[in-house]
Image (cartoon, rainbow, N blue to C red; front, side):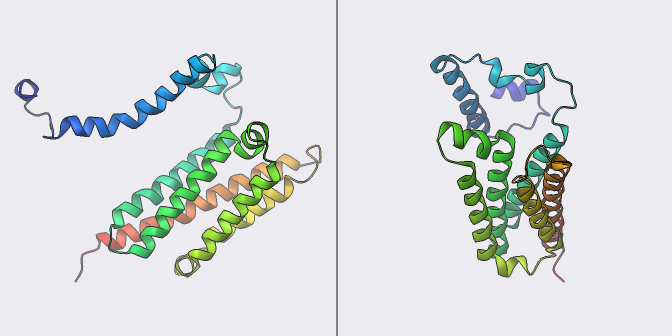
Length: 218
């Protein structure tokens, strides 16, 4: 370590560098190792896990582009919630817990959307019907909204209402025959607008809370 400081005196090297490196790189190492284990235990080529789906399918770049944009919005909303929750610290415990749970809920919804959990994983691998999975998500969102209702009504929750409305429309359209005229316009379009509304709500809320915390007390 001293040699590194000698050769690179301007390099900011913390005293607890080994511990910092361990905490930083252990999670991605464990995550990658999981797929290495699956490679040998399930005899699945490693590049099935590592390569881009479009490259594997040899599909045009625009396949699923709206779905990918939705995943990015889910992820952005989750990061906003987690960051703001920790940035608030213990100054506002109610909003801190609300944002922390919002980040967890958003991550669950993002994972389901990204991996199609309710359509493939639960029905095919766990033999749990898609309807039951969707019902569990509905109950989760309902419980989340009830528990934090008093906090939600103190925010500018217009975009959150829009998000719920768009999600409800998307779920309803999913019950219609997939060959119906305009089906995918309604289902996928309303889902995308729902995700964007969800992101817009938390962007607005987190920006307001962080700005208030940064404002000097007179």
